[in-house]
Image (cartoon, rainbow, N blue to C red; front, side, top):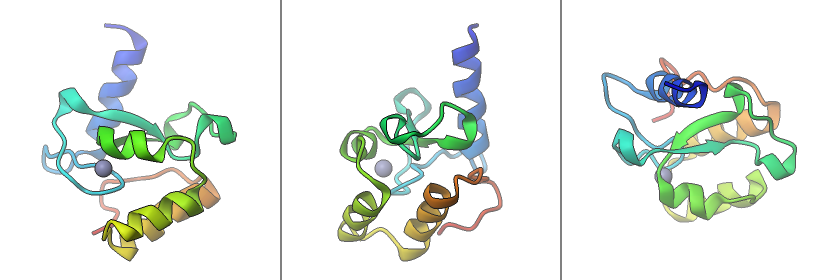
Length: 108
Ligand SMILES: [Zn+2]
């Protein structure tokens, strides 16, 4: 098992709650085979490869977010009816680059 695979597994476990994995952005349930690893701050915008900057997302969000700046992506999420609380937590992570501790972090 390669390091990359272990990293991916660790990220999935970190974001799972009671064995269920949901997209960090839109909260849709995703199965483990279809997880996209997204960089909160895009690599092209200076985001790092470190785990603090990575979350699990559905492929739709991953594709749509692409390299958009956080403000723009937040606007799109809002249009899609994603809750303010969830968007706010994303913005906090994007702004401060603090580790997104998903477990126990209420982002409903
Ligand atoms: Zn999503």
